[in-house]
Length: 485
Image (cartoon, rainbow, N blue to C red):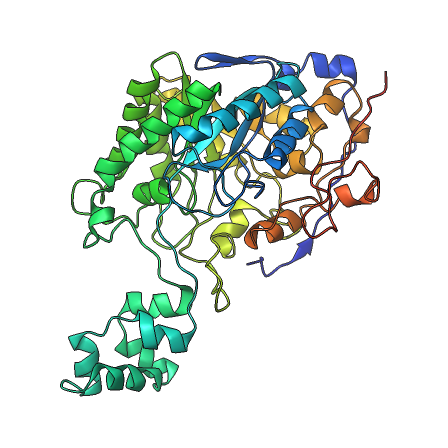
């Protein structure tokens, strides 16, 4: 993963935790209305993919245990991981692409309600993603995958040669010569693996995305409502389809690319289809980027425009992330797929304890604050969710009191200690296990392994009650916490 050149080492520390009485009077633990639901507190666990499902995308017992454990901490809201809206194989990622998934999702909703005593609202994040293939073995790429064109023949002066000879000639070229011989997309497919882009208008499936996606998202949202979720979060962030439409790199010429209004068109049409399907009494919001952190990508001004457009359309909340793009991802090894959190944009999404002068904490705070200001100045009171390296009560409370956000998201800190919310609320913050921001969890995610926290394995790892990951070396959920009376 990309790291700043300064590589300054930071350590997570908290000098002060609030008493129970101080926490009771804090904005962080005060209620807020988000669309049709009331959160008991302004704490939020953003969507994180833990790889607990199966190849069929079903709610397994491991999925239920994962979210029930978070619910025991009684945060204001939990957003269930990115869940696929297409009925296609996608590995151990949850799916909501067919009615057959509703029963399992209902069990998940019930488990969270029970574990939180009804205190935690549950939303689910809906995602679409385009095809991406693993980086090919060069021999196989030239032998089987590359489509031989007239341009290849002309570059090699083999216009009339058998195709096998052309393939053999290409495979024998040096990297430098090969890069100038192949098209940019062919070279990219060889170096990183073939990947569809929203600008591939020659691909009928990609060209038709404005027609196919709104009903897919709408149907998925209706299943979420049927399953009992309190709301849905439309995934418009990071490296995936909807974020790619919002990106300044989207140069489609069909009215869905180019300027900011055109790039926002499909995300707004998706929202409108969802809203029409689920009704006005159901919470619908989205997660998008404050900044893509890539060359020629969308920046803060774009994000302010999108935020105002989403608020004007009637979204019930706006949740902001940062970076996490394929555009600057590091080259994967042969046989692996590119991972969109390995470049600088990925670091800005999940900064680590080795950082620059700014440090790993709160790097998204000021951009989100500016986005919130732009929304308020436009006349909207849409709740804004901020997140990114937030681990202490003082950090979170200051964001609310300084009007830089309305809700505070805790991702890696909640992963490190799902009981953060109850520990702090009850004046037992000194018991909190603080995230080290080592990105141990991110390393597991990159390999599509069951995501866990390195801190968990320091407690009762060998207990008979501890459920271990498939490798038998890590526990699947955080250790239990017994509060002091």
